[in-house]
Amino acid sequence: MKKLTTLKIKSHKLQREKHSLQMLTCYDFQTAQMLEQTGIDMLLVGDSLGNVMLGYETTVPVSLEEMKIFSAAVKRGAPNKFIVADLPFGSYSTLEQGIESATKLFQYSNVESIKLEGAFPYQLELIERLTQIGIPVMGHIGLTPQSVHELGGYYVHGKDDASAKKLLEQAINLEKAGVFAVVLECVKSEIATAITEKLSIPTIGIGAGNKTDGQVLVINDLLKEGPHTPPKFCTPIANLFDLKKDLITNYLNKNQEVAKANVQPSVH
Ligand SMILES: Nc1nc(=O)c2c([nH]1)NC[C@@H]1CN(c3ccc(C(=O)N[C@@H](CCC(=O)O)C(=O)O)cc3)CN21
Ligand SMILES: CC(C)C(=O)C(=O)O
Ligand SMILES: [Mg+2]
Image 1 (cartoon, rainbow, N blue to C red):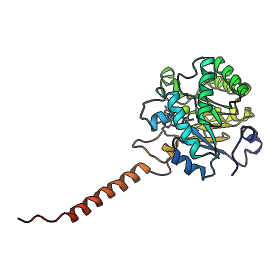
Image 2 (spheres, rainbow, N blue to C red; image 1 turned 90 degrees about the vertical axis):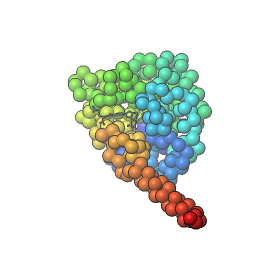
Image 3 (cartoon, protein in one colour; image 1 turned 135 degrees about the horizontal axis):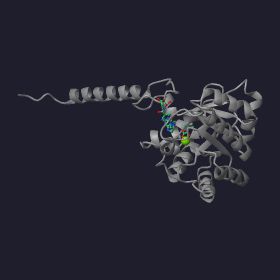
Image 4 (cartoon, protein in one colour; image 1 turned 90 degrees about the horizontal axis):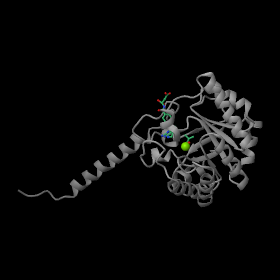
């Protein structure tokens, strides 16, 4: 399968009845090697790596250096996939800082594009500037986890008229600013559908119903790599945590038996 391009992604609307854009997060070399051999459209080196790879409570502590290391590893494992890397919290707090951070992440890791959260005026300007430099940008609105402390928690957005109107405006502004696609995270299904109808670029949903142009999930949630139940919008297709735990436990027990059998019984 040929690697996607921003041009192909932008024209996805023309064939959206035929194909849903499928995206999963990926953080490491070997998982990237595995996904490289699947039909997946796009990989996201999400700042959710802070949660699932590094054990941070939120995505807020994730640094640009960490994003650079994981993004470069994923690119080495999946050179023929279209890769998006998240700009982390605090790396695009001003226009100039955002340009510098995005350039560093993009150039170092060699990924195809970057993603940033929000649609405030300075962020729209940042998106315009980045696309002018040659860095494709994916937008992200609704639940923007980097703002969890400001938002006051993880919840579904677009529940009332004012919030729904704001989301639609943000999505339209992002498209005007030049994003090639936009993530709608935890957006009320009806609003996500309305945004999807309105935009000419694809929408990628997570906890936003099933009418978006594509879907993204955290791969560790999908495979249940951790001990806790994933967010309710994700139904795991496996339980790798228990599977790996049982395999290792069996291996340890077998080794103990072999070790015991090898020891000469002591004579009393
Ligand atoms: N492992 C993981 N999966 C994710 O989907 C994810 C991350 N990490 N880190 C970054 C953000 C944060 N996200 C989150 C985090 C928590 C909820 C959550 O607690 N949801 C509640 C429902 C909240 C409500 O509706 O009020 C749930 O029970 O699923 C949702 C999305 C999505 N992203
Ligand atoms: C949940 C997705 C959209 C994300 O931004 C991440 O994994 O960091
Ligand atoms: Mg993210």
